[in-house]
Length: 226
Ligand code: HEM
Image 1 (cartoon, helix red, strand yellow):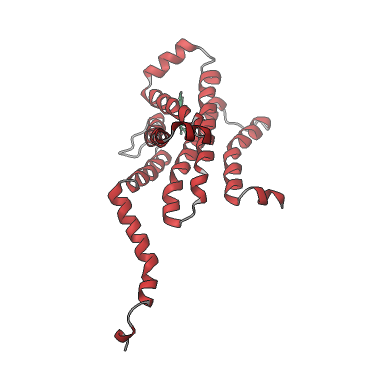
Image 2 (spheres, rainbow, N blue to C red):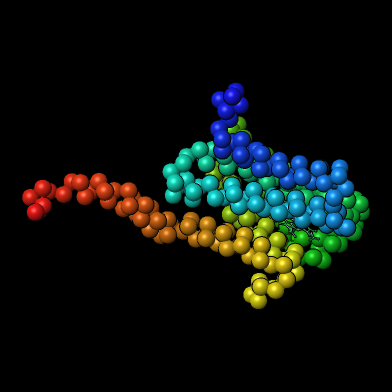
């Protein structure tokens, strides 16, 4: 099939997964199968898809380190851009459908609800990353490009905090609908711990040890053998 010559299975999977949320939303809107609070459901679904794509984009590097699958590194940009797309839809639903473009009310809500401030900061930080994710900006910004894109390590905890906070539950007692955001927080914590140089070194030594062990065995001097 021609499509498999142009795109890898991973690329196709990512595009299908990314569009699936929008596809289901449109399908359910057309078939009138939304819940009694469609605006809240739209807000929640787009927010969840955005944060899932964000976490997936962050998992590419550690997964490549473990499974040695460099194509994952090439797919970070696509996942990042889909994150921005869903975060933008999420924000537009909030501004337009939820608050009907009532700017003074929006401003008051942003400052009254700390989880919205956190979400807004995450969103504002996400925009320059999306804009500069293209090769032309990589060349233009040089070394600063990598520095700028490390902001994602601030965005991700902010987005998870926004998620947990929006649930109005308690993460310590796991009360409220907090289980799903707690899973995201756990994945993110493990991922961020894996970026600490000492942990990274230890994991790298583990993987090289397990890779070189059979080779080392085969080079044992024959004289040692019975
Ligand atoms: C200007 C920025 C943002 C605003 C105004 C905003 C607004 C909101 C609001 C009002 C809710 C609560 C919906 C409800 O339960 O009634 C919410 C939930 C959520 N938002 Fe945001 N958000 C923003 C940015 C972001 C970003 C950047 C992300 C992720 C990358 C995100 C992910 C989420 C998630 C995961 C939820 C919870 C969904 C659920 O309850 O299952 N938000 N947001």
